Image 1 (tube, one colour):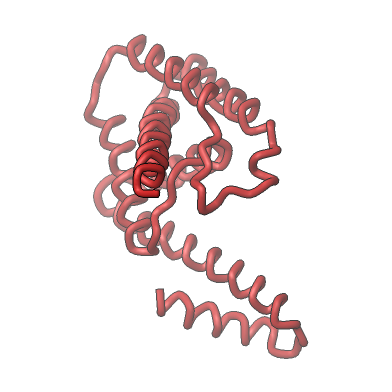
Image 2 (spheres, rainbow, N blue to C red; image 1 turned 135 degrees about the horizontal axis):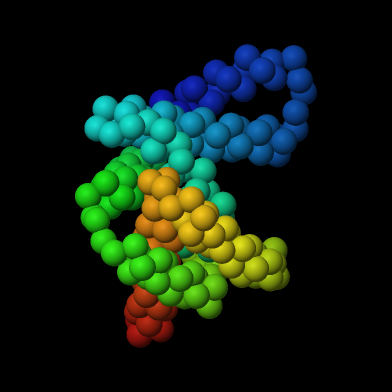
Length: 197
């Protein structure tokens, strides 16, 4: 993360050297730049690895399909840049590998993704306690957005039934598994906290 911070400070100094920001404004801009630069660097690294093993277009499609769904369902977040990078790479390779290698019955995949969509609608959004805000708790649109996104993914699969549409179904399934794990982890953590108090 030290490298990301150095790059962020350099970019900040180049872009905003003539601006007078308050300390708070400076911190907000630096934080935003840090997030942006770290996400771009992760995407670039994953794109390189996926391009070497499979096809770089797959990573871009997975990214475009995952971001809207993940933004609305929530879930857990890794606590470091390296953990997030490794986890994101494994996630991307898993989706591609399942689409390439797991030749299952189309109806089974479709039914499983529909069941997962219902589960997502029921339990989403899952917000980790360290990221919980009033705005997040009050926003009721997440469930509707989740329903609409999964409906679009499933409809795309039904209409075009192509390779990339299978990515969308696997993303629904894997994100449901992640969300259930996150929910289970939160439950266990609450139980342990209550036990030790």
